[in-house]
Structure formats: C-alpha cells, structure tokens
Length: 133
Image 1: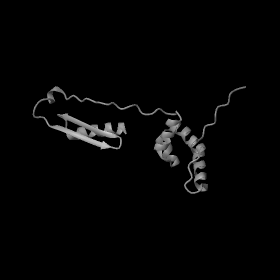
Image 2: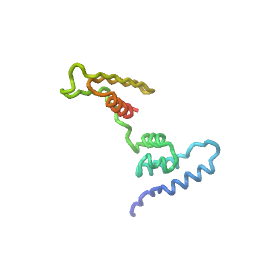
Image 3: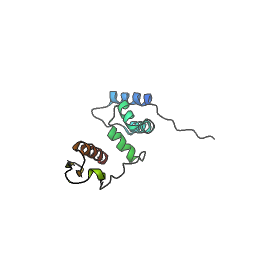
Image 4: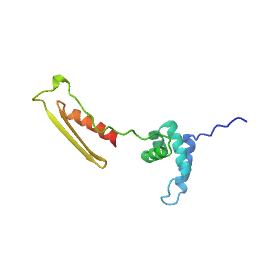
C-alpha cells in the first residue's frame, strides 16, 4: 500500500482557523497547540517573519516554539572575544582612540579601538550586540 503524504496546511487555511479561534475565544485564552503546530509548519516553509506577520503572531514566540520542537536550530554561541587590528598605515601615535561600552540585560560589551572612527565602532558594536541578543 503506498504511503500517503502528510497534509500540509495552507496559509489561507491557517488564517481562517486563527480568525475563527480569535472570534470565539474566551477572554485572553492561550492559542491552542493545534494552531501553533499549523503556524510552525507554515513558518518552516515560508519563514518565521512572514508567517508571524500573516497570522498576526509574535514572531519571537513562534521562533521559540520552533526551536523547542527541534524544527530550527538555536543561534550559535557568539564569540567571547573579537580582536580588530588596524592596518599598518593607520597604526601609530596621534591617531584617535575610542572606547564604546554597551550594557544590557544580557551583559556588557566594551570596545576600545585606535585609528577607527566612532561611527565605524558604533556600527560594529551594534552588529555584535544584535548578534548576541
């Protein structure tokens, strides 16, 4: 007997199911697991951001559920130390030095650089901070 392929949920079907649930839910009832499962299937195929926007869901919660279900891998551990070396023609006395310190809920980030502009360091620190968050 041939194996049947599991039915995949279309975006339109999921939208209709979510709308129905939202119309009939009591108070602030949690989204049922069956709806989360449908959303995760769609997100695996179409992407988390697009699915969250289409189904009016919190993208962070959707991604977290997908990670817990093993559908996507968690983010890699960010490096503990990153060394930036200025080119030889820029190194030497008299060059501007800059230190940027960022502090947030998940920790602190301090960057000290010689020969780079504050704008370059701000761009780098934002990229590193976003990757670590």
